[in-house]
Image 1 (cartoon, helix red, strand yellow):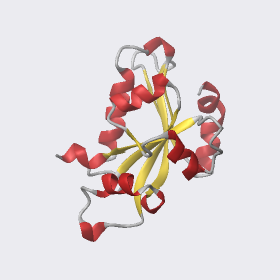
Image 2: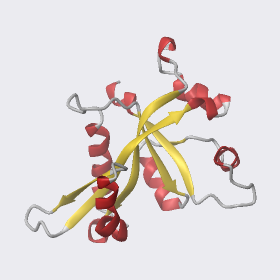
Image 3: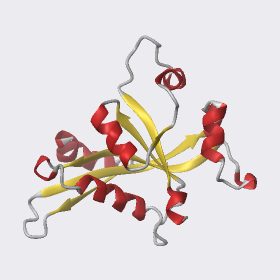
Image 4: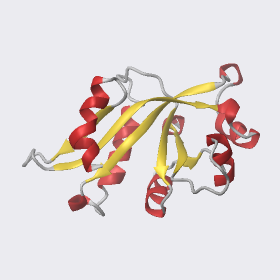
Length: 167
């Protein structure tokens, strides 16, 4: 993550691939507290298993059923080691969620999506922040991704439905 934010994030922005944002300490702007990168994405529901597709679109009015729904991809997200364990990660995720439901937001996106590292700490972080797995198990996800059944998944696709923030 350090390498991305020190070298790659500017290139991502110039190439219109993703936009990075960071939060710094007010009293010392040289101290980076946390950062994240977002870009446009979508959830292609026609590629999902029927049970997952039904769960994903159940709260969307029937006349608005499409083959894909707009989403915001959280690409890179991190908290400075010095600030871990004090709730900064939760605050950051709450900020991102509120940012994309704000009336001044210039894009319409129903979902936040993330390709979370398939590690207990990362998966727990996103689960604790209301994200769900896009696929109910790793075998379904491997099939969708075209990954051999004997290979390990490095990441897991997860989503958060922003509409729950309006209810």
